[in-house]
Image (cartoon, helix red, strand yellow):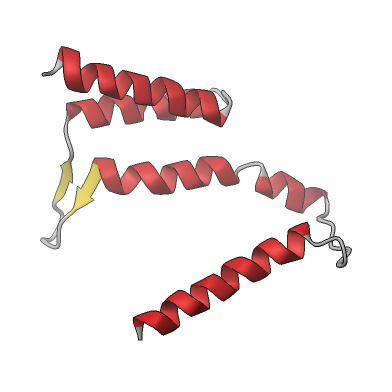
Length: 107
């Protein structure tokens, strides 16, 4: 079963990449599609950090945070993202802040 899932996800990923990068297919996105894809890096970053910082347990209405260092770095990353700072800069600044908090300030 898991091999079928891996093969299926591989096929889906390959088809998505092939459609956009193949020179044989003349697939071009419209203005709305290009505008929509501008937000994809922020969406991916959010999908990565939210499960790390906020842990949801299977008890009703119980949320837990990973720690203050995680929460502060995530809040700074969120503010920088809202300020429309480039994604690479957000990753570098929030990662540096996290490591400073983790190993020097809150250690």
